[in-house]
Length: 566
Ligand code: NOJ
Image (tube, rainbow, N blue to C red):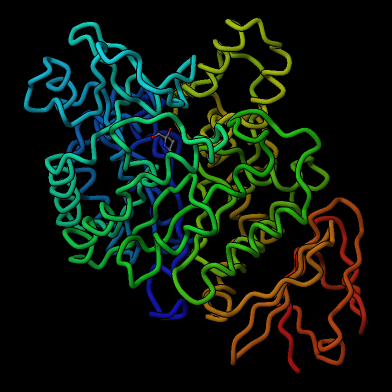
């Protein structure tokens, strides 16, 4: 199968909802399923096609639902199974599809499987998890994201053994080498598909396979655990089995979260002929502004646009003939794109946010839009530890204190990098809690909603970020060239402007984006100098455009989509 073979999940636009923060319907300060049901008309009005919900399952919430204690029940904070059934039915009536989060690298330590597993060394569930008997000494080091000491081995006195947890101590890793684990997971997946869901976003799916001898981290990884975790010996065997036994039987889409998977390994996961996944999220962009190997520490001096462009260009090339990419600028684990990749200063905010919309919706690959980005929500930048809720930031704080680190640096970093930047409530209107809830939300609002960064104001204003978003969605929908057409970068080394062509037999589009706060020039390629340019979308007044046969002059954060008629 070729990359341009038509599929609904290639042509669709995904809208990601973090349910805790989207809409509270029962005034407990936590978003819920009924809140989403009440907002379906809004979601539909955006022009998106597919909704991805972060986990809504039973969970003690050590990691906000990524620690699941029962895969087949709904967390009471979010409502009931009846609410879920109503949600899916109403979504389908409106022509929206539903993708659920599938967290199967680990469970909660409160899951019945783990409760059993830790009871004794010969419990039938013992091998559902990865245990290391203490008499063999301490196992070789493994890194944990959410452990204060970054130690992924937790000693359990009751059975005198260590268990593995790549994430928090309350998120023990499942043993994918145990066929009983795999079958139990497949049964659960079928159960959700039979309920009518349209796909799964698979949490850290690249990590599920482990060499259960737990050797020392091989030298070639040079201390970098990400690719090591992603290159488990049986990963493709497991994904192919899952495809054969479950996915192949449904008209579904799958997108894997794949930290550690690089350009070289990409097609092993998504080449259609291998029958594994449809798409995955790579991490090259998400790591671009971070200190290498550190999740929350910002890289000194920021990133260069040429690097940002190279990442997208290289990844586009990988999927140009086979497989399919996913395009995203943010999600629940990363800050708001306008604050991160452009500029949220009020002087630039509108142009910066709309420029990023233009980018996201004009690239090849399925676009993923994180809720609130459509109205240009910005980083909240909490400066008090009491405002933060995320285990990642709270652990890092404890670690900083324990090690006598610099708290000023800590806040400087987390104001830009904390996951809580993206987890504050959706901004619906100018009411007290931005229309999210009638009571104090589980995490404070970003106070800037009163400055017009809310849905009600932007729905009324034809020149808002939201309206621009919808226009750009409309343009992508109208032109399949923007979905399947080839991508060709122009002037890759330009440090202010990102320009590229999208083309096929039907159309040629030129997208020109100024990623800087200064007026910048871009030289048109020779072959287009004689052409007729039709500007089909711009985030400045058309009269502000200056196009002459050789060059285009762009204002700060200006974005233009032109159709080239030769
Ligand atoms: C990736 C998820 O996106 C993140 O939110 C979570 O903390 C980890 N996986 C662990 O499940």
